[in-house]
Image (spheres, rainbow, N blue to C red):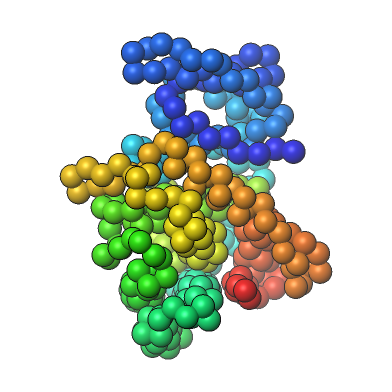
Length: 334
């Protein structure tokens, strides 16, 4: 079974027959013990330290359909090496483009994406409301903003509504999480512990969505809520909005409230905050375990993992674009 591998330390990545060989290198250039990974067991590589590799290595990765995702010092996603698009289909590309170019069709999909994201955020808040957390005011604010979604006539208007919903949602985090203060959302770089985890988790969620899109016929650069950009896979941003409450936020709530990550696990600098290496590994492990969790899918009648759920969302979107089935965003029931 293939799985994702995370490279947290700087080092050199090379090929040895059908095996990847990662050799960590410290700041003084001293090599550590090499780690050998059979290529047949690799799904994705996540690189958080500087990586020394050559074009022959990336050719090897491409032929074996292995994607590599890169992050900077602040755990911000900076880019991906993606194998050649082997599933892209002409008809899907044409229909996806048509939906983007049609203001009515694009608006309809963008509205559904915002509604799905807002519903899942509310589901998180109601979960904690049932556990005696005072989140009534954020829920009320989100409800008021949600009434504006059906009448929005422009994408930027929908983006503004989504931003207000998310701000109200983030305002509840200090009520849900013990021992930490959020003090508003801050990015690039995040300025405190909660913001650091949100940024890190969101980037992991984005790469999961990108990976699952890649395994369908969808084009990851043609999106409907976020504006397509020349240097980003914007459809992954669209889908991540739906899954961040389930995959990222619940992981953060659980880990902080169970004190699996504590204040000592962060490195604070002037106007920035980053995770220490040990805590980063702990969070990644919890996130991976979350992706592997299964539940009984109400439509399929069988157990599926949360990771596979993201791919199913891609299939639903594909059917909508091809006129086979109206898209309905995933809604959390628990």
